[in-house]
Image 1: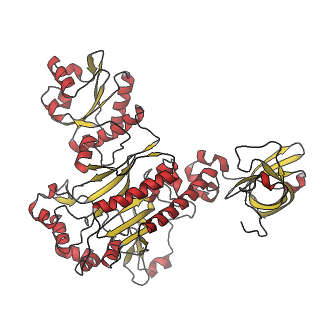
Image 2 (image 1 turned 90 degrees about the vertical axis):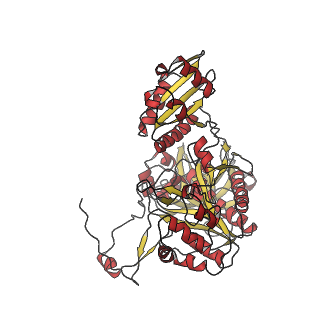
Image 3 (image 1 turned 180 degrees about the vertical axis):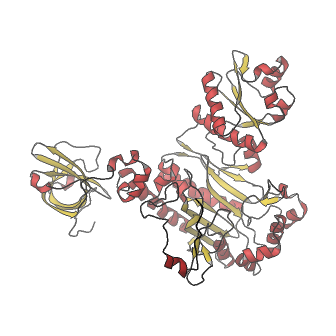
Length: 581
């Protein structure tokens, strides 16, 4: 560290070999402890904590915790060493103290108790919250990972770009944030939901490999793993690239990040690849947590042949698990869980001491019981959990139940990172109201079979070169082989009910560019904030972001969003209509 008038060293670097040196430290007062006629103060900065010894109490008259001070003194060996502190072998015998920044006597909350404080108060005083050691370290670690990503992608031949923040509306599907301008009253920019079109245009411009740590903006509700408003992506695009090329780069990056910055046992590459249709069949989720060994089977056909009324003629999804020794209370709790998700309840059975019992067994004949055990290979000690409902609802409920059973039965190894690719997503899905095709995912993905598939296949049988990377049950990345052919683009949108002029008017830049020699290209984007959650062992995405919005999309620290002045509105040609309360 370069010496200046504030410090010769930081608060984390002095060691036993520095005993005898005259030093100068600056930082925040972390704690004050009086012992007889001696006062001990710990001083904290970005780098660590050092204990300061005062033999004269007058030095610290009026000093309170979180004041910023400069201390000058001599490094001495501590009589009572603290092995839990990096600087625990020494302390500074203070000769001089100067207050650099005063602090109010009463804090909104104690810094070391911040994790137990209401989140709204923490966010309002985020500058204090960020002083707590664990959160402070997470934000520093975030910066280290960002630097690693930049360096590693550069080594892999990628070039970092910046794309516009003031852009046009985009087709990602979420609501846009729109931005007025005094230069064109009544017209609006949109903040980009992603740099999707810009990065494809860079490929058309002749650049080979693009990346960007890209801020993205979506006007949507918060979840534990999704912050409202702004989030960051590790955004990538490659010219003349296949799906395998993209997977290779992503697997290198993901495994190296987790191995370098976490203590997890990380799955080895190449990652397992699961077709979307198989993921929905076996896990009833396109984000399966592969640490959980439980799989789903479809029991609809079996119960269609029985007289078990509440399971008959419904989509019946079933999970088998070693839970035959569980009490009735356990099965009731699982049923309550399903009801909490607006399900109708849970059917269950278990085989214990060669006897099948459960919520629906009395409605079965002895032959049906025997066939049930044989059909689903139910062994001694097994239990089965069945959800029967409309198809989409049954799939959603059993997928949630699989996750819950994995936790309740302690089947998930929390020391592991398991990643897999979900591939071959459907290109179209059926509109619930009209029955006609809608785009299932990114409309700019290349359909497998290209133009011929669009011309000849049932739209609901077409699959896309679309892929997700799933990590421990979270979608960590999404990407696709891009459609770079304007004829295919027009046909794809036509099937979804959009005429050619909609494509030309809604996506003029891409549509126009594709007529001037567009290379085959592919790409993806890691959700950077979401990737940090398992690395930092955090369940809330707000714990890995320096200045997050709260659950309602409000910045409690800065007081936004806020009401603009009439002058601001008038200059942009905006008038706000009063809404009925």
